Length: 109
Image 1 (cartoon, rainbow, N blue to C red):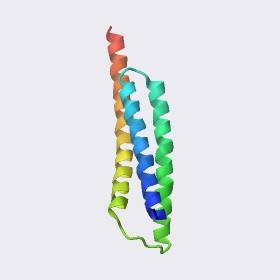
Image 2: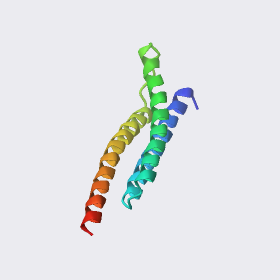
Image 3: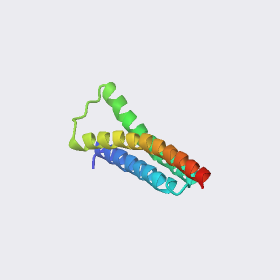
Image 4: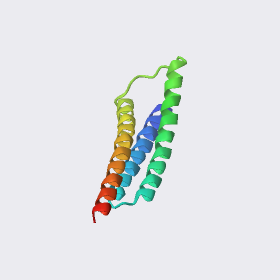
């Protein structure tokens, strides 16, 4: 497998792990486990950072004149990267919603 493909698969793998951590954080926040949810967000962020570093290096290579052909795999990696960022934003917002709902329900009981 050539270096470009290895980089692309590494992006896909890392951002996929990030997305998984974010979704796991959302799921446990439903039960009020906010500290653990925050820890999972941080773990997801580490995977996202790894994917971002590889992505940035590919962008820098192209900017310096090292052109690569655009492949379906690269497009998929870009799509996965953007969706992981979107999932992170939505999960963080939803965790705050769960936190507020749980606070309100605990006051009403």
